[in-house]
Each structure stands twice: as C-alpha cells, then as structure tokens.
Image 1 (tube, helix red, strand yellow):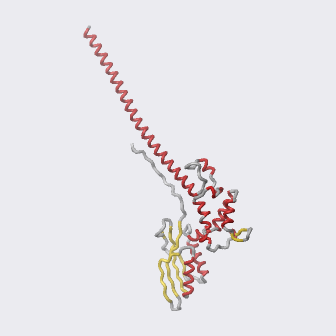
Image 2: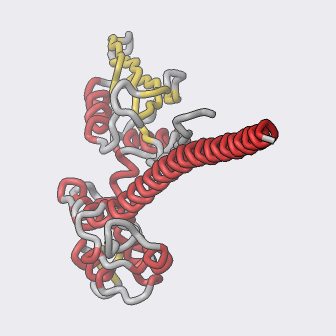
Image 3: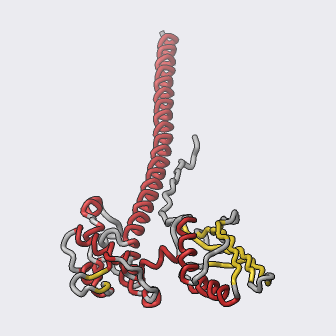
Length: 290
C-alpha cells in the first residue's frame, strides 16, 4: 500500500510539472510574440511618422511656391488649406494683398522701370487711351488694374500692362524661344534704319548653350557687310544700340578694290527657355528591408 501511494504521488507531481512546463512554455511563446509585435509596431509607427513628415515638407514647399509667386493670397497659417486653394482665383487678386511676391514686384517695379520704358514704343492701337488719344501712362494702367472689379477687367488690365508698359521690352531683349525668323526680322529692321541692304544674312550652325547662365542658349549668326566706311559704322552702331544683345565673337575687315570695307563677322545672340517648377519624387523606405 505504501508503495502504491508513493507511486501515485510521483505520478501527480510529474503531471503537475508537465502542466507547469506547458504553462511556462505558453507564457514564453506569448511573451516572445508580444515582443515581436511591439518591435513591429514601433518600426511601423516610426516609418509612418517619417512619411507624414515628408508629406508635411512637400505641402510646405508647395505653399511657399504659391505664396512667393503671388498666385493666391497669403494663407491664414503656414500652409494653404484645401478650402483656401479652392477659393484662390489668380485673376481676381489685388496687388495690395500679395506684397513682396514675384507678381507684385514685376507689376509694381519692373513694369515702371524708366530705363526700359525709354525704349521707343511701336505703334499699337491697344496702347492708346481713348480718353486722351495718347499712349497709356503707367499710372493709368495701374489705375485700371487696381480699380478692376471683375476677373475679366483684371485680366484685360494685366494684359495691357504686359503689352504697353516697360514689360514689353523683355521678350525683345531676351526671347523665351529659339525663333530664328524673328531674329532675322529684327536685324532686317536694323539694316533698314541704317539705309543698308545686306549682302548675306543667315543663321549659322554654332547655336548651343551659353557659357554663362544656366538657362541661356545661343543662336549663331553669320553677317557679311560690304559698304563704304560710314555705312558700315552706322550698321554696327545700330546693332550695338539694339536692346537685344548681339555678341560678335569673330570678325575680319578688309578693303576691297572698290574702295569699300568688307566685314565678315560671326555673332551670337541669346534666348532663354521658359522657367518652370520641377516636381520631384521622394521614395521613403523602412530602415529594415526585412
């Protein structure tokens, strides 16, 4: 009987140990799973925080661009909200509400530049003020702009400033495209003013990128002049006085048997591509590739 009782106790102890081992094993498994899940969620939270931070930085940059150009009025906070962007209407913005922006600086500063405005205007009926039968003054144009009450009136006043103010000179001085026909037409006008008809005038094959300026390109020109010295000097002087830059890179002068000057020249003129905002893509990866 004693042996049977001892054997029963040992069996019960062994069974209890098994239960205990199983409980410890189960607890260990749960604890390990919890540790793994905690680490996973920590990494996921950190990754999502990085994504949100990058999104916030992108929104801030977009807002800075919009605010700097003057497309919309200044936001109520650091960035534009969806509602503010929906209400934004570039054609109905008063310059007084966007001070210091590119748009305001161009219209308030560059458009009234006296040095640019001193260049003689071409005859353009759109620039005639019907009230005075004279060219619009800058003050009259800005009065129309600031007093506009509709988007149509504001757009018309903005176009008037572009066409009739000092801003009109900028596309002539530095065009935004490679237009060889317009270039030759401008030179032909210079020659007409100089009372001279060119022997030869054509673009050359030396066009390319300018050595200065990141957005400047060149159009090469071959110029041949054979005339008396007075006419040659007059042509070169009018080219020099042109608001568009003509950079003579190489030239040769010689006397002909007809007692005239023969000028062979290679020159460059410049144009710039349209400025644009480059949109970039940023890829964010978790730190642990696993």
